[in-house]
Structures are given as C-alpha cells and as structure tokens.
Image (cartoon, rainbow over all chains, first blue to last red; front, side, top):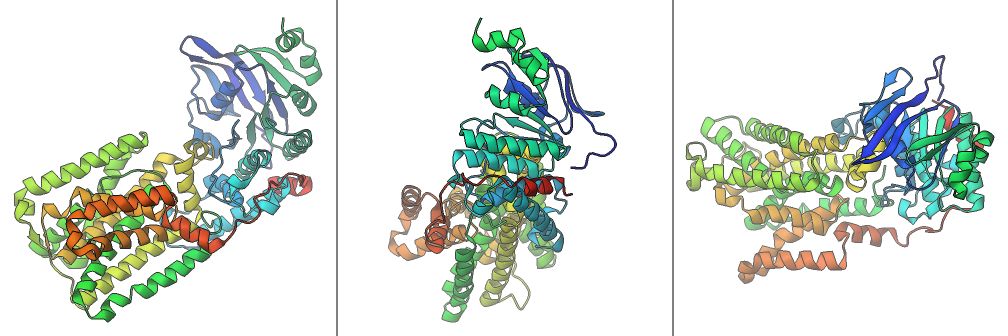
Length: 257
Length: 335
C-alpha cells in the first residue's frame, strides 16, 4: 500500500471492556504506525485477544475511543473497518475448507468488488475483470508466502502451519493498511517461525502496520519495533523491546512473583 | 472461482447429459410423460435458486411453498380474472414474491438461522390459510382455473418448451453465480460468519440478496405451476411439497448446482415409478433421504465430483517451501 503524505495511525485511546464484573481490558491506550510491528504480549487471560477484538470491531468498547487517523471507528462495525483497511487473522485459522487455497485468498478481495449480484449472474465483463485482477493478486501473494504450489488444493488438505500462512495471505489480499495477527506462531516449528518472521518483516517494509499478539515472547522481542505488555487487562509496560524485556513488572509476570 | 476445488469437469458432463435427457419426453409422443417432465421443470426453477439460499448461504427457508402459492394465485388472478397478458402476469408474480422476500428477510435475516426458519414456516402457514379464507380473491377451497400461454407455448409440448427455456436460463444464472466470486462469498457466509465479517463481507445483506432472487424465481415457478396444473386449489400447496424441495437439495448435495437437479428429478419420479404403492410416497422420500445422509452425506453432487475428479491431488503439506519475499513485497505494494 502506498501510504501517501498523511500516514494515519491506528489507535486505541483509554479503551475499556467489561464482561460482567470482570474488566477484560481496562483503560488501554496503544497505537500502531504504518510500517511498524507492534508486539502485544501478556500471560493467558491478560486481555490480548479481547483487545484485538475491540480493535477489529467484533466487540464494542464500553469506554474509550478507537480511531484510524482522523476517522473515529469506535462505533463502526467489523465489515466497515475491514473496508477501511483493517485486516485480521484468528487464533484458530478460519478458512473455508471446501474451497481451494486460491479461492480462500481471493475472498480477501471481496470488499473491492463493485459489480452487482445480477452482473455476476449474467456473467458480464465487469465481474470477470474484477475476479481476474483479484485472482492475479492472490496468486502473487500465494507465491510470495510459499504456498504457490498448493494453490489449487482444497484448503482443508493443508497442514496447520500452512493454514496459518494461508490466512495471512488472505488478509493481505484485502490490501490492508493495518493487520492484526492473533498468535500466528502458535503450533509452528522453529523453521516455520523463522519464515513467519520474514513474512511479517516484509509486510512492515511494504508499509503495513502490524499488531502481533503472541505467546512466544522471544519471537516478539526479536521481530517487533515496539512491545506492549498486558496483565489482568491493563498495560504494565510499553516501549522498545529491550526496555520492555527487562522491565521489572514484565519479568515478575513472566517468571512469577 | 471454480467453487469446491476441481468440480468443473464432471459438472460440464452432467450439464451435457441433462441437455440431452430434456429432449426425450416430447419425442415419446406421450402427453403424460410431457406433463410429468413439465412439472419437474417447474419445481426445478424454484429449487435451483432455493439451493443458492439453502445450499450455498446455509439459510433454511421453509416458506418457499408459500411463495410458490402466491406466484400461482397472482398469475391465475391477473392473467385469468383480470385478463392481463400471461407473460406480464407471470412477471408480476415474480416481482411480488421478490418484494415479499425483501420484506420478510430484512428484519429476520440478521437473526440466527433458526429464527429465520421459524419466520418462513409461519409465513408458509399464513399463506395457505389466507388462500383458503379469502374466498373473494382466491375462490377459497373451490379453487381457480389457470390460463395458458399464447402460441407457440399453448400446446403441452409448447408449454414444456417454455418451462425448459426458463429452467435453462435460471440454471445458467445460478451456475454463473456459483462460479463467480459470489460462490465463495455465499459459502463464506455459510461456513464461517466470523471470517466473512472480518473480510468485509456482510452476511445479512448477502443472504437477503439471495433470498430476494430466490423469491423472484419462486414466484415465476408459481405462475408456471398454475398453468401446468390447469386448476389450483389451496390443497395443491401442501407441506409435503415444501418438504420435497428441501429433500431434493439435501440429497443433491449443498454447494453443487447439478446435484439438486438429480435430486429433484429422482424424487418427482418416485410417485410415478412406485405406482400402486403411491400411498407410501412420503415413505420413499424418507427412505432415500436416510440412505443418502448415511451413505453419501455430501449428496449426489459430491459423489459425481468424486467419481469425476479421481484421486485428490497431493494432500501433502506445503512446508519446506520458504516464502519468496521479493515476490511477496511486490504483491503487497503493487496497486
């Protein structure tokens, strides 16, 4: 994506979300810049995924504000946020198993399709042209992430790590400005994690802002430009990786008091 | 998009086979065969688009029997009582049913699937009661005569040709949709609402568009149904007929266009084939449904695809191939 003169930030400002009496996310502020990898770590139940759901719009914030540059997203729905350039993946990949790998990636191009239902039914030139452009992009992305050889296979024939990478390719097909990755390294081998790291770095170099929610703290400190640590729904440390890594509260949370 | 991976070849063969069998009934010279084939064609016009709704978007509509009835009565009233041109009356039935689909779907398609099934069930019940009660409009239980179409579609063979042409058109539209990016969009809504949302695909609007489309074709099917029966009464629109539409799709296999056609033909022929056992008609529906669900859960469509495509190409994992970062960067940054 060419982020022109204005390079808007994606940010949460003092966002709070409660489930009953439990504060899942309390007063959290965080911003992701274009061309930056922002890591989000924390123990189980610290509110990482809840925050990701607040950012992508699956949950509504009880308090606080979410914005993309000047656009207030606080009350904007999931599909509209996707159209505005916010993509995400899931902890358990949500793919369409009966579709081919290529068709799965092409689904990422849907929000750019302008041709109508009837134009598709009548097989007119515009839907064909749009599908061709999206197919080309999807193919290039699949080659890029290393799944080009299996593009015609059904998605459910892929192994776990390939499914994770496929979901990232699908999110990239949306041509997003920001991408939120929910534990992309979960269940991957050391080699696969290294590959993932290079893919994420390439996304950053291409100007995309990445929010990386992850359990593998080593991977996060190695990959990210900036790291935020959550515990019990609140931020305990945020800043450069080396500073956060040695922060006493972070050390305490990860090693036990 | 090619829909489920590698189904194109067997579907082309199936389409060619169907195109040939469609020619058979008129060639026999037997009016009864032509009538049975006409009725199957009429049902197919409804089932083809209902299949998009049920099979592709995963939305259970049990009320299409109500739409068929409204299409039939609209045609009989406008073309018969009021004296409109038959084609105009047919189209009016389609437009009316599409509008009803919009009104019915707009508030209810946002709810989980179960509620939509209840709404459409209630709709179907209301329509059949109204057809009985509003005698000033529908002649109540006495029923109404349905007009025919002008030549060259007036004779039984002619009408069969008209139904076949409309059926082919509807099949072509559905096929295009399934192969276009809409195929994936509909299946995304069916298989993973969450994924669809995250990709910017609105599930409720997707279902609504398909429901309105299927409402239109159900209305058209209703008008043709009226003519094929010559005379319609509220009894013609039984719950069993609605069940038949459904079972055709299930035994045909969701996510396939040709499968439900095979299902529709098979189910419609059963009462003809069993002859003296006709009182057990519903029993055979049940038996086939049970057999298909237990033996080939994917239905005939999947069976045909499996036979046609042979062994599945390489189910191996793709690990070992590293990413091509140059290509990736280029793919992301290019507009």
